[in-house]
Amino acid sequence: MRKWMSILTIAVIALGCSSGDGDTVEVGETGAPAAGVSDDGTFIVITVSDFSFPAEVDVPADRSVQWVNESGARHTIVMDTQDGEPADLPEVELDPSATVGFPLPPGEWTYFCSIHTSMTGSLSVHG
Image (tube, rainbow, N blue to C red; front, side):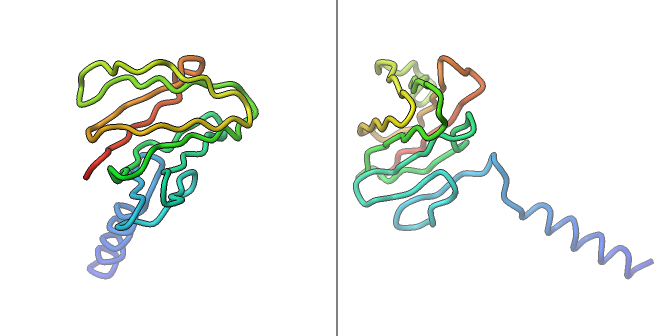
């Protein structure tokens, strides 16, 4: 019985430590890029594919954010809120094979695609 409890405990710990789509992606000097996110030294590049954005991305304040649309469909980037307050930035068109980028001030940003509202993401811009 004790052996089975040990195996079950190890399995629960292993499952609890696995990464999934809802995990924060740390990019830049302290973290390694994950699927759909890269750091070219100037931009944190977020790749739009399969009708999804990475769920959460940490962005160093010295980087701009750039979205690259590889999904084959038209999307938009609508900055929804910054730190819970409505964002005052225009909607950005992201046609297939398009790239668009801009700097964001420090804070917590959420965004979505106005065409495909299930596509959401958040950015934590920090100094």
